[in-house]
Image: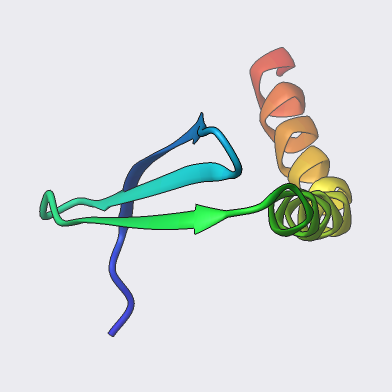
Length: 69
């Protein structure tokens, strides 16, 4: 079963970055990641959000139209 994300942080280290992920139960996991890995993660997140943007905007427009009535 997937855990729910509470928050994450990214801190710059000497040679790489430290990605810390915390779940809603307070359990944290740390990953040492390089620039390329962070760049790939950022691109993947952007791709997913761009793909969902149209649907998200449609939902916002529906709420705006309901408020105008």
